[in-house]
Image 1 (cartoon, rainbow, N blue to C red):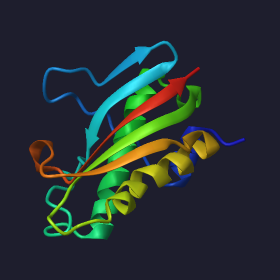
Image 2: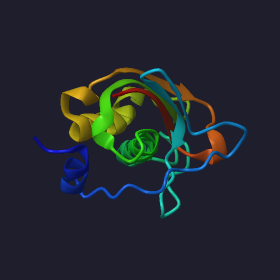
Image 3: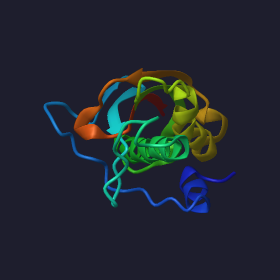
Image 4: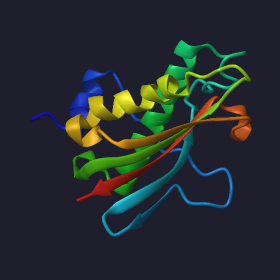
Length: 153
């Protein structure tokens, strides 16, 4: 059975260092078997994807932004799991937020960029409950933010 790390390698994904908090909070909190991961924005080594979806950012770019959020979430999961992603028993819930223009309604399609990655990386354990919400503004002007609850062994 392939490991999470091998699935990520097959997808061409190299996990970044977990993103440090930009305010007064911690990147994740563990309570029992559950880990609550703070929102991860669509930032990457190239600067990430900023802007308003539906006006400055098109759907395909927004989906890519959500995937970046997923990669950042997995980096936080790895830190919470002390370096062993195979300790992730289940991705329990994702909460996705998309900075949208007044007429953009395909918010669930955007967050699929993150959801699809969770299933690709974790298989059935990556299937999760989810919320997808359009908002007026996100921190630092990024296009997408996603937080998560995961179960660790």
